Length: 388
Image (cartoon, rainbow, N blue to C red; front, side, top):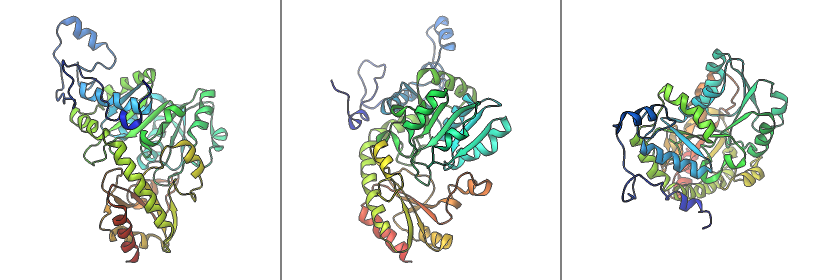
């Protein structure tokens, strides 16, 4: 049989150890499992990622989720965490030692930037940032002690696109680990593993959940690296609870249909905003005006559902717009079925704005997370907010 399409993969659940397969996997809401004998107990104590020994080490419900994520990304395996930042921290903490160097794109999720600028230098880890739109900088900034290159594509909130395949080819020649945050694109739009990435991280809180009811994250990678990450994961106690995993399993099954609607809505909203006289700049990879539109077309299967734009008259006008919407809800985070609006530099990226200039977020930038509402309602809502 030919390889299944993404739409079929998302509803194709891994089997559960049960006589008759449940169409909805059960929640194994337990912290411990009874061992049949001493030999089995010792075996599991020394095993890697047993799923029926102790839930901090593994859980059958969580395992189903991890298998689904690995399948969608085209990877060998995945590890689930209670947040995206927990996953990011685990990857970097497991890989970097005092004296090592990491190279990271400038425009990046706020807490990733804070972790790298404030915490890791205290551990003796050197950090350098490169321009997301200029990967030629990488060869000039890489050092003999560079162990990781970390990128987001599209990034948060400037929606720059990084050529993952080109960076991966460069890192492979030098034995440098490449880590890609694929939260904005999701496996529906982009598969960094297939483009050469070693590790993919996700905030599952966003599109994978899609319903704003779960906090979770994931690492997707090969079995060898997963063993290293799992060793640290159990030490820091950063395991995902079974109920959250169960909710995410249900959400994944509607990922394709949700995102298809959200992406179509985003394209219509972006085109409308480009025509508005009060808007200085619209940023959306699906627009021909985006400076990396051609790269996005080449690298992605869809352009995502985040639209950022800059208004004239600075922060005061931005605040009027974000407070003036009725369909769009004023809130941080993104990726859910409900459309959200925020002023990035004082909300999601306020910590970056306060602590350094490694991530540049324009003071007049507004970020939209497009949901599944009628696009005409979204456009009318923006129209009245901009007119206010």
